[in-house]
Length: 109
Length: 109
Image 1: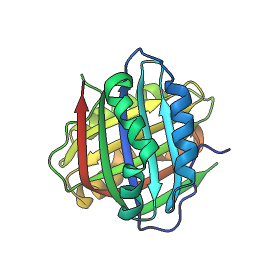
Image 2: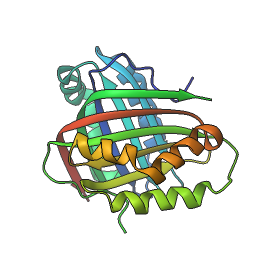
Image 3: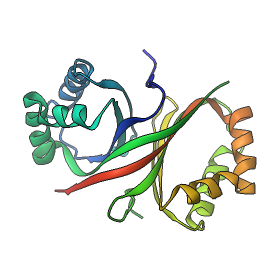
Image 4: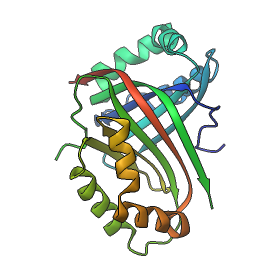
């Protein structure tokens, strides 16, 4: 699977999640995979791009059709449980930004 | 220096740059550092968050006060030269998205 999201013509929405992990594993990898799988089943989900480096800093950008789709995902029960564990165990720090994508541009060699 | 950007209250703008590197080094690291240094000198620049993993996939998000600030940076002569080398040497593929940040949320343990 390509690690680039295939998004439609703008406008659409993006959630930029920048995070710094703790050292604690405690099921993190499994939960992260499960959340991506679950996100793909959400109405209005368009795709995701995600990178984490060796120092534990990560950026995940998920793309959505509408603010309503983002709101529904935020309120999803399994996702809410993951968010709680994220704050108590997995993340030292994070920033979450909800954006409207107004313009995009793609390049391939 | 924190690798999280200190951004003001929304609205402001974000440029999400997702990229896959080639194997070619050819001054990439030096140029990337120089571009960040130069971006910090641009009017309207608010900060940057950047991660690249071992596979060569990276996400860099830069934050800006206005679309005009983004346009000026795009047209900056040194940056234009770097963009050209990016397409001919350093990047296999990239996606660039210009967004308006409407809402944000921060967490610290």
